[in-house]
Amino acid sequence: MSTFEDSGLTVADVQSLISAHLHPTILLIFCHGIHTYVFFFALCHIAQRTHSIRKRISFAAIVTFFWCTNTTIVALEWKCVDLLFITHGTTLEAEYNFVERGTLPGGLTISVLRALNVFLADLILIWRCWVLYDGSVKVVLVPSLCLITETVSVCFLFFYAVSVAPSNSTARADWMLVYYSTTVMTNSLCTFLILYRITAVGGVSASLKTYRGIIEILVESAAMYAITYTVLLAVYAHQFYTGEDIIPRVYPQLVSYSITGIAPTLIIARVMAGHSRPDDSWTRPSLPHMQSNMRSIAESLRFACAPGHSTHTGNTTTNIDTEQAQETADGERESDGDVRENKLLAPGDFKPKR
Image 1 (tube, rainbow, N blue to C red):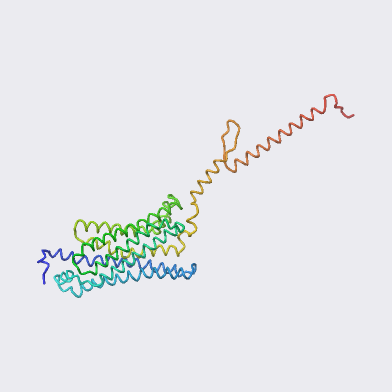
Image 2 (tube, one colour; image 1 turned 30 degrees about the horizontal axis):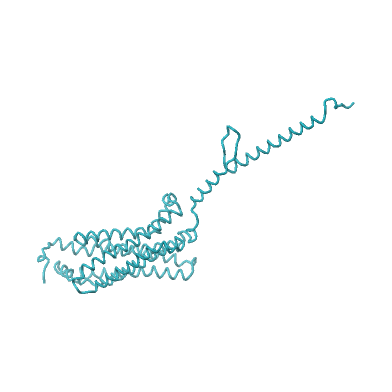
């Protein structure tokens, strides 16, 4: 059996390689704790009787599926740590040989569960875009095509993963890059569509100046989900084209396990809690748009004034102008009556009473 000295590695290199299996797992457990809190928070709002039983059951099944798959992934990762540091952790050389043999269990199971989570999360984002755009099929057509391409790429990835031919390793890496790229394309496009819809309906200033508007943008658009996979794609592409060590990719990869479940769970929790906008409100004109229309209508209603006076608009000015016009008309009628009386009675026709 070869040792790490035969491979030209030092003790510090082996310790760094082995620590790469422990530190990311601790980070994964921390992220899973956050996911557990979000999961029970969503279940509390789903259990409320303000929604139909069919809607509550479907949403409860979705968030439970995310949590169960992530819990299974955490258990498998922790089992790998237990085998590495407890069962085979007698010496540093034994740990290195265990890692080099590639006998860490659950690798394919973790990949399958992760792919199912990503597919369901992207499907929820596409559904949310469909709701926000009033059931427009044209809007969700491109994200749906990206999701189909993502599914095909992950199928080829699994095919090369179970293949024992050594010549398939390069093709497997190529399909992994395609899979990450289509995943980023799907969730980034959905995030952009949701962000545009929120700012178009609520207004940019109204959405960014309030704490509620910022939370709506971050949660509804699943921005952290898109950012996580964008970072993962960048790290993987850098490692794929430069050939550097794969250890830095472990951290965003394990964090993406929990983020994939947290992002859609937060969307469902927000919808069931009643904090999101009603489905029919996305088709109504926004408040700033209505105010601008009312302002343009008011400015078009201008009344003529006397020379030297400014033109006013509004209900108060209109009432004042109407009262002034009425008083002017009454004064003209009184003066016309006095003139007619003077014409009927001549100066000599007036005879005082004795």
